[in-house]
Image (tube, rainbow, N blue to C red; front, top):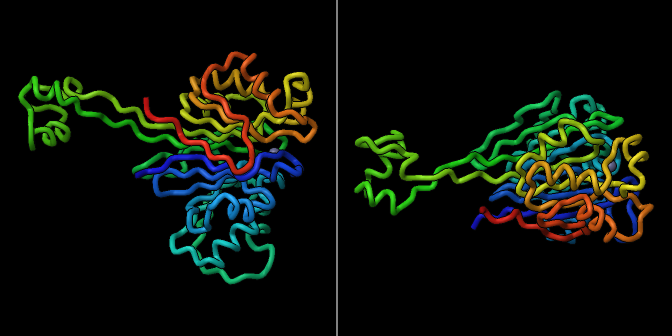
Length: 301
Ligand SMILES: [Zn+2]
């Protein structure tokens, strides 16, 4: 059984609170684990959430502010302590290489795992596997910030009744799939597009083209909403989004499940984020993230 779900490790911006750890998000995508923005305390949150170092394959950092990256030091050392048997790849803004170097080698430890550095210098595709394409897009924040998205390739689903109507059966089905045509019957006459699933991770940023491009058609969008709408001026000034802005992006992009997170400690009632997102017109599934919650990628339509 392939599992595709988000495990929320932390949801606080800037400073942790009694109920919210610094950022940290694990995406399980079939057999792989992608850890996004590990803030301070991520190693312990992983333990609490039942996530092992062995579950990690990629580390993806949007930018080098502490709430998104200070956990790298502990997580990388833990990966080595546990002698994770597979290689790990780290993605982060190339402009922050010196920060990554310091976090990777902040204290003494024995390196036992092959960790490949794959910094991001521009928009584009970072990796292609049979299960997904990983892309990055530049965001708009006081320090260089890149958002990420996973796009599963579209495939075709064969339609048994149409195959039968054309008298195609057995090994001929495979021949038709490979050749795209068999005895005058085209593949698109006997199959339909099975749309690949999409996951997007957007943080930290003010509104910009990258936000919309990342969110486009996402089944699951994790997006920062640091501020409430009444503080939109503060949000724009500091390079952040409000709940209403995040919801408008999600609506325009046709997002199915919207996860709001990265909340400022100045607000005490999380339900206001939900209300403002609804007031902004978002009608899909909506989650105001809490630490240690799990959010499944929505089932295919
Ligand atoms: Zn932040």
